[in-house]
Structures are given as structure tokens and as C-alpha cells.
Image 1 (cartoon, rainbow, N blue to C red):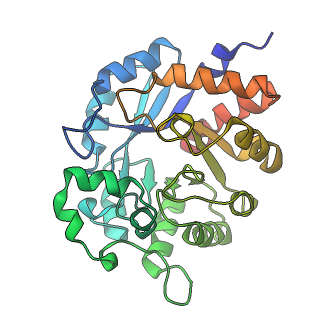
Image 2: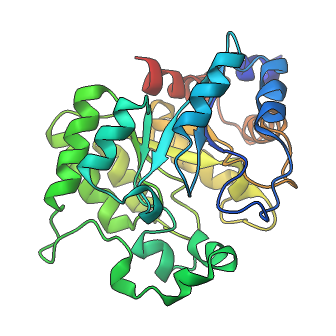
Length: 295
């Protein structure tokens, strides 16, 4: 009998929000230490720490001093409060140990127009309600080509073996990022929760993104009742069509009402097994974060 717990051994969750993120009022009561220790007890080996707001690079560094045999990978989201999607922001992030760069999330134009996380942010940050549409980031020129700064960021990440996640940018932007990354031989690129409400991608668009040699992320949070934008059978279909070698399972752990990270993994992995996804494919998916972050 296939052991689901075995799939979690050595796993790395590539999408975990630090506490706090955006506001102390946000419902996120578990401490960073509690989250990490729960993962360690389940046999996991690491997580990528993320914030939509102030970068958590220093926090990740401090946490790494406390724990052995468990890695907290620092990241930065290229939102307005961090300085935006510009090479000099990425340069400092790399100097401070970033292992993952997130393209804009709540500062992305796509997030704003698709009632994504930016609508939640406005509850805590009322001044953002005054921002005009042109204050949100769009990564393409008028002719549909990537802006020069975005090309430079991709080149910097390729040179330094840094992972890029697409954040909350639009399908069109994601495809152009995927094309350019493939053109320069860079494949540490992940399509962030492509079925979410902030950046919904069609099945065909997901296929195209993966066809350039990149990765597609599924988040357990998108199966939760409040953020339900994904079905187990959707994940099965995508795995079978693009191959498990291009798939990543993360949690997007962010709310106090979600199960623990190991429990979230266990539930979704069990469901995928029950609908016929091969155990070896799930093993490949759970190993892909290590490939992205360590190879």
C-alpha cells in the first residue's frame, strides 16, 4: 500500500506566508516557529517564506539560525512597498540571500482588475484605494513585449540560480515571461496558483506555459471552501497532460483556519491518489521544490 506520509518526508513547501503579513489584524494566529516546528515533526525539510508586504529576508535569516536540518528559504515579492519589479530591488534581494523572487502580487494590475488579494489589502491599507490603475504594475510594453527591466530581472535570476514565481500577473504577462526565460535557457520559473481568482489561466494557457520547460504550482488553499477555485480532477488532468515533472504542490498557508501544512499536504495527496494519480507522479511533484531550490 502506498504511504502518503512517505511523500511528505523531506518535502519543501514553496508557498508559506510569514506572520505577520500585510497587517497584524490579518487572521493569522500561528507563529512562524509553530508553523516550522509542525513541519519538522512531520519530516519536512523546508519552506519558502513569503510576504505580500515588507520583505521577510531578515526574518528568514534569523529563523535559519534557530533550526537545524530545516531550511527557511528567503523570498521577496516585487510589490510597491518593496520597491517594485526593478533590477536594483532584485540585486539587493540576492545580496540578502533571497532564493525566490515573486513577480508582483497585490501590486499587479491583473490582481487589481480581477479582485485578487489587493482587494483584501485595501481593508488594511485604505490609502491604496486612492491609487489609480496606472500605479499598478503591468510587465509588458504597448507592443506586447516584455519590458527591459523584466528581462534584466530574469537574466539576473538565471545567473544566480534564483527561482522566479509569477505572482499575480496576468496570463498574457506570464506567457511572455515564460517565452523569454526559455529563450535564455532559464527554467527555474513557476506559474503561481494559475487557477486562482487573481490570475486565472485556462487549461490551454497552463499547457503553453509548461511547454516552455517551466513549472506549474497547485495550492491546497485553492481547494478550501472560501478560496475554492480548483478541483482535484483539474489537478489530475493537468498532471496527466503536462507531466508531473512540471508540477509543484504547495499550500499558500496564510490563514488561521486552514489545516497545518502537513495536514493540507496529506489531504490533497490522498485525494489525488484516490482519483488515480500515480504514486510515483506524486513523489516527483513533491521532490520538484528541491530541484528548483537546490539543484
